[in-house]
Length: 122
Image (cartoon, rainbow, N blue to C red; front, side, top):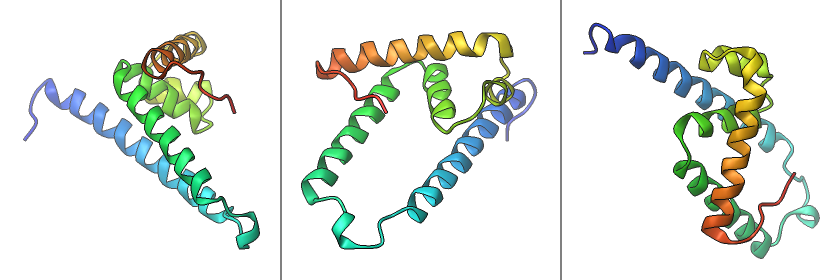
C-alpha cells in the first residue's frame, strides 16, 4: 500500500503509464483498421523482418534515454499536441517544444552511437 508523499508520485506514474497504454491501443486499432485487404499489397517476409528489427532498435534506444525524454517522444509520436503533453507530464506548455527537440536530438545521437547509421525520418 502506498502512503504519504509517495502516493502522489505513484499516482503520477500510474496515470502516465495508463495514458501511454491507451494511446498505444488506439494506435494499434487504427493500424489494424488500415491493414491491406489483399495479399498483393502485403509486405514480404523480408520487409516485415526489417521493419521489426527497426522497431526493436527504436525500443532499445528509447530505453537508454532519460525516462522523461522517452515519455516526451512517445506522447508526441502519438500525435498529442504540445498542450496535451504539457498537461500529461505537468510541464510548462511554453517549454514543451524545446524539451521535445532536445529529446529528438538525444534520440538521434544515441541511435547513431548504437547503430552507426541514421534513423529514417517519416
